[in-house]
Length: 318
Ligand code: BLA
Image (cartoon, rainbow, N blue to C red):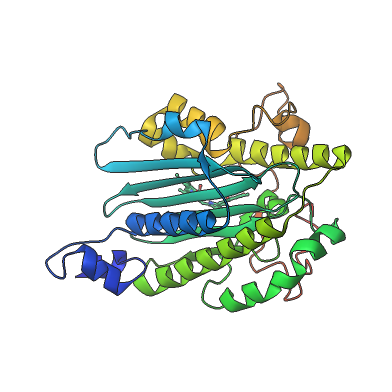
């Protein structure tokens, strides 16, 4: 029953139910990511009305080249929510992916909910965060507004979901002091903890969304929009999932999925290019350097202390 141990996902009970209470049924962790998606959508609907986002129609039925892999793409918007979208990828006993994000309308300066998990039988690579719209090392007001009260969250998970080690340095400017960046063995126990963290973080995001008041100052709205566009531009260009998506659905579909679904808005929220925002990636011929990082990987240990102060030195451009 090794496979059950590896893939039982969030709960023994659920695994038992799904496998009919016996036999060799295996609950893939991908189904478990789907169970998070279902929970998250239910929690959202308790607070606000969701309507299908236009991108959903095009990507809802997206299929992989190989029959064994199932992709599931859902997207919505709501009164304060510009885009709430989810992609899961499941290939039995192989790869399980969750990419779930929520972006507010630019009239709100809400952090971006970001839950990414890439699971193989060997390990799960996870990033879970309320990504800040503004650089929190430079912008103390923003940090205080959203993160000061949230620091206990990271205390809750820092032992069970420990820092995952060196990481693309540039990613750090998109992370908050409560980020969970971790790599773990995909055991039932670990996924149980992850499920709990995903739900905790998402509930916090929903609460922030609920409390958010609309910004009427046009200058600030423009700034929020550009900050979100910069984020979308980074992720659409440098997403670590792209090579896998390319393999699964082919290059042109993968590009469409990234720019019109996962990071929808990259072509409409602003007109600046990747190199306008991140000129250090420019090659001599004016094209974008394909390397994910120009600086290299760093931050062996968690670069924020328990109060959220950045203690990682100056190499992140923070
Ligand atoms: C690895 N994914 C990673 C890593 C990070 C992230 C930090 C470790 C490698 C690195 O340091 O770059 C995730 N990075 C992020 C996120 C942000 C960021 C969320 O900057 C946000 C600002 N991952 C996915 C999806 C797939 C995926 C959808 O989210 C696949 C479809 C795959 N991620 C994936 C793979 C690796 C990875 C295969 C390991 C291989 C690699 O590092 O390229």
